[in-house]
Length: 164
Ligand SMILES: [Zn+2]
Image 1 (tube, rainbow, N blue to C red):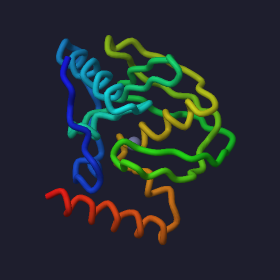
Image 2 (image 1 turned 90 degrees about the horizontal axis):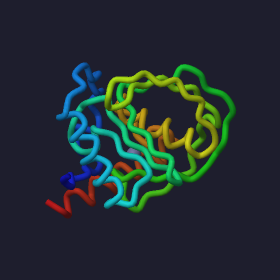
Image 3 (image 1 turned 135 degrees about the horizontal axis):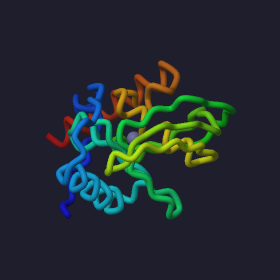
Image 4 (image 1 turned 30 degrees about the vertical axis):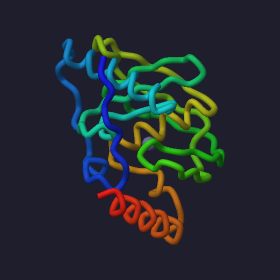
């Protein structure tokens, strides 16, 4: 296994819509196991492939020991609404209250191309929605008011400049 670098905003890969996965081979399984390792190392509960620089529809999630590898995930039904604080490994140190559905139905394939059809509720539904957003180039700040979004964008851009 290998640790991968988690990209921070404003890295341009985070703004590219990810491509569907069509080949389920050992390379994909190796990528997923590297993503697990990277996610655990970074103390996250979810990680999407664009966050490590790959525009592929792949996500890993571990919420309280429930592990999911999602390939080509798609939310097909949503209900309920809840506001809760969430963070993102690509926005280190930033936590914001965001409204999301409390119950979702999601279709996806696993690393062996087996199709799944799960109903997910509570905070886990939030994690799924957040990670699937990444595949469509949608980020945490896109859920905020324009004022807050501009403020956080500038803050992240300044931070990136300082690290150059
Ligand atoms: Zn994120």
